[in-house]
Length: 220
Ligand code: G3P
Image (tube, rainbow, N blue to C red; front, side, top):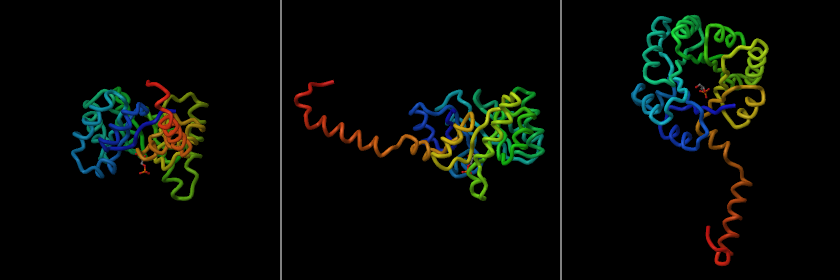
């Protein structure tokens, strides 16, 4: 399973990319708004860091034709751009038209496997089921990833499943186990993935032992 970073923060994208662990970036209008900077300039700056890795940039209109126009403008910014489109009737129309124009799409705000199937059939490159927001309303979000993954596998559907709305590291492991292709992950959760108290304690002990005896150990 690949890791995408779910962020519009340049510093977060830069750091996670430097670690060599991310295979793409996703944003949404809320993440862009949180940064309070020009949308297109932010997208371009992220492209300057991640190059042609897939970078989802979302349309902000409820009209299908405008979605297509915005999608085409976004796609012209860079080779890796994936047009993120909300799951509704206009979104399906726009997804289908953009797919016919050879533009990649990520259908977002997926909360059922029927929505995921429709998005895939409309030509979506990616679908983004939101697991955390389902957990928030007392449903088991991961069931949606498992169900969608099973349907796509059974019917050889090539659309990739992005586990979105990830809240903690257990979501990452579970998404990988039930067959998600990608987990788009907040920076904080990617940081948590690398941490283990036994690793920290082990490093401290190795360094202390080295320091204590280093005069007899030569140099590297
Ligand atoms: O970018 C889509 C998704 O990951 C948002 O997550 O935490 O706002 O539910 P969240």
